[in-house]
Every structure is written in C-alpha cells, then in structure tokens.
Image (cartoon, rainbow, N blue to C red; front, side, top):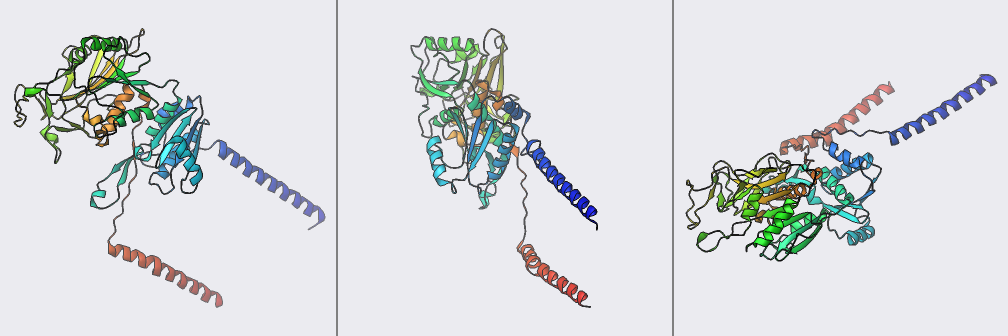
Length: 480
C-alpha cells in the first residue's frame, strides 16, 4: 500500500471513528431527552391515567418524593416503576429511593423529620407533607393465607394514592373540617376501637385542618369551615343549633353525618332534632334497624349488614365489586318530594330481601311485616345542589351507621374506600376519586414433586452432560 493510500485510509478511519462517536453521543442525548416508556402489563399497571397526566402538567410548585422502602419489599418494584413515570412526566417531580437498611443514618433523620414508621412514601411541597404507607398501596388477597400461604397482591393503588398526595401538598388552601361536640358524639382524638381518630388522621394526611366545634350557643358555623362532621350524637340538637346548620348548608356548606340506632326506654328511638333539618335537604331518616338475611355474615348478628349494591355516583365509583360492613344501622332514604334545586342520590342499599325492622319493643323476635321499610333498603344518601353562579354548591352525605367509620370499622372490608370517597366528594376534590386500583398480573405455577424432580434432573444432569458430549464430539472431529 502506497503512502497516499495509507494516508487516505487513516483519514477515512479517523472520520469514521469521529462520526461513530458523534452518532453514539447523539443517540444517547436523544434517548435521554426524547424517550418513551412502554407498559407491557395486561392491566396497564404502570400507565398513568389522563387525570394524573393533567395534574402533572398543571403543577406550579416542585414536589419532592422520598421512598423509604427496602428493595425486598413486596411493592418496591411497582412503586419504583410508577413513580419514575411521574418523574418522567413532569420536571417538577423529583424522586429519591432510600433503603433504610443501607442508609440507616439518613433514614433515621427522615423518620424523625416526617414522623413515619415502616415502609412509607413521603410527598413534600413547601411546608406541606403527605404520607402514603405501604398498606395503602395495595389490595391484598388473603385466600392463600388461610391455607398457610402468603397473601398476594390483588390490585395496586399506587397511582390513586400518589396523585392524591400530590394534589394534597400542592393545594393553595388546606380544607378546614370541624367535629361537633356537646351531644356526646364520638371523639376524633379517641384512639380506642369506638373512636374516630383514624378518620381524623386520614383527613390530616390529606392536609385538612381538623378541629372541634361546640355548636350549642354558637351564632354561626366558624368562618372558613369547609365541612361539618356530626359523628353519632346521643343527645338532641336544639332548634337554634339546627337553624345555624341549616343556614350554613343553604349558603353552600358541606357536611358528613354519621347517625346510628339510639334507643330510649321501651324500644323508642331517641329523637336527635336532626330529622326536620335533613328533610329540608331531601333526606329521610327512618326509625328502624336494618337486617338483610340474604347477605348474612358467619358468626355475626342479624343486624350486621354486608352490602356491595351501589348506585352510580362519584363516591361509589371505586367500590364496584367491593363489600362494606355496617353494624346496627338505620335506613336513610330520600323524601318523596325533594326541594327544587336539590339532587339526592342513594349510595348503597341492601338486597331485595332486606328490610328495616320498625317493631323494636321485642328485639329478640325480628320478622318482616307490612309496617317495615321494604327492601332494597337505602343505607346512605348523598345530596348535591344544582349549580348556582351566586354561591357554592351545597353537599352533604348522611349515613345510617357510625360504626363503619370508627377506628375498628375502617379496617373492615372496603369501609375506608367509602369514607374516603364521601369525604373527598363533599370537599369537592373529585380528582382524588377518578383513579381506580389496577389489577396485577398474578401468574401461579403449580408443580408436583415429580415435576420438580424432572426439572432438577434436566438442569443439573442432562443439560451439563449434553454440553460435555457436544464438546467432546467437536474436539474429536477437529483431531481427524
């Protein structure tokens, strides 16, 4: 090869190397800034919904996400993949994964700062924080656990919880929720089985301000109140108290009422003074105890109502197919002629075989008769007012049971979903209701001892022996 040819070859080689490096750098840059993520799971487990994408596009403040979770956690993979998609969808979202076992010192500092325990995902924007614990991320199937196996993940709720957390920490105003006092109501600071501490804690995690309100003697509901909660009053409200509540609701107020079966001597219902108020807003409260033999629960009394019969509504959107459990509940329905401008809707009801028992003088003898409330019996009602340009919409939800929202009741079935749905709807945070849980692809392989033996023989004996024989055959052939 002549000198000229060598020079031309070297120049061509140098140009090719430079072009190759340039192409490699360009491909990496494009891949880093213009990449696409794909979700090959059957249920679209890692795909973000339109609601989430809209929330992320409208973010105006940075959101820092800290995942305190070990890599061995059952939900680590799903959590990491979904949060990485949030990060990719918005430059204002930053995500840090912190393994407490590997970064113990930093983890302890964050635990003290956030006040969390166990596997938790912390969302922070400015001074606002929201915690999503591991048990909130999934619905578990315990059918295998009953036979000694481990519970499996039935559905992953990560997107619902994560988007809810982002909305909570980026809201301009923290909703103010007040609990009435003075009628022997349930206490939101009571951590016992009958208390409402879990409800209050759920509201606080959504960045709500929770306070109590002594309604007796008050001229108005406290200024800035976004929702009034009446949790199983046992003594009557006075006319002046109901007048204050009526004015608040008429002016676009919001309320959650948890009523219950309160009996006086002789099987007579305790009058609480709330029936006329609720009737003005289209809600009928009956003096009965609801039973439903068609949905009886083993080892439970007849007055424990199990139901998954829901009417279409934003509150019940995520409850389809999931049961709720109510204990000793009264029926709550709709008056015959609701006032103009009100839109009452039954949320949940019994089966057609259920009824509301009105003869309570002899509770040991419960029989269906003509005087009883006919099934399906309504158990909860939501009331919305028609849009009005002059004032905020009125919203209230009335339940005929208070036990399901107690500390012990929220741990049963889908009671927490129902409560969260009602609270978010009343506070007009529909964006937190629109993302359903996503089913995970559970693939189970069942093998007998014989199958395991055959696989072991194949992997440990047959395949290695075949490789040895093939190698010897090649060696012999080359020797010839």
